[in-house]
Image (cartoon, rainbow, N blue to C red; front, side):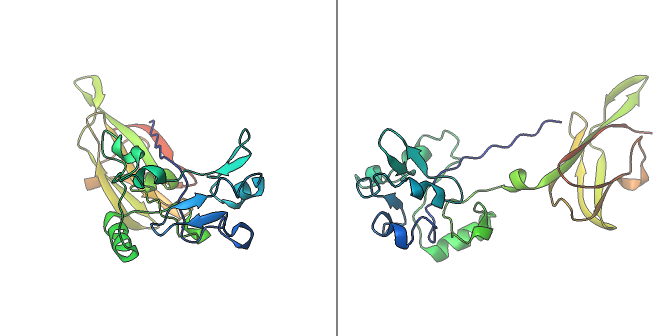
Length: 223
């Protein structure tokens, strides 16, 4: 089972970024609209600023001898653009730029399940991600097959249960390929158990495991 998740990274334009400190006063500043700017004149030769970003999103331009970040296309916004180029060219609308007050953004994040990168850093990052559980959480997956007139076929629509420490956590059904997956799981949370629902049995199920990372349980055959 292959499950790959990708996400873009850039300057988070933090409200309390470590790059803005006493050593970088008037060099790294935040505009009224929240965009963090590194002054290309005052920052000349300041390679030390690169290491101040805990996300690694300030880069050193060796040719210009400048630390640089993604400036949210500030020069285009200043010319009247409503949003940066990156969100305008996304054909699926997966990237969105909004200008709202902090309270409205907090409500939007809570409503949409949006998260920032590494909130434990306390930087108050302002780039938000949806469905980030696919990146920093784990899954348990597997496949089911059944015998139909002597031919092994994918078992579609079979209900399975996931239990954690003796309590029912999730239910799911196999897809057209006989695959199933339980997502958004916390590694190290305890003992997970995958069972077939309604008392059905299969080779290899129920399966019990202590999750350290995403696990594929392989192919099980319905009894």
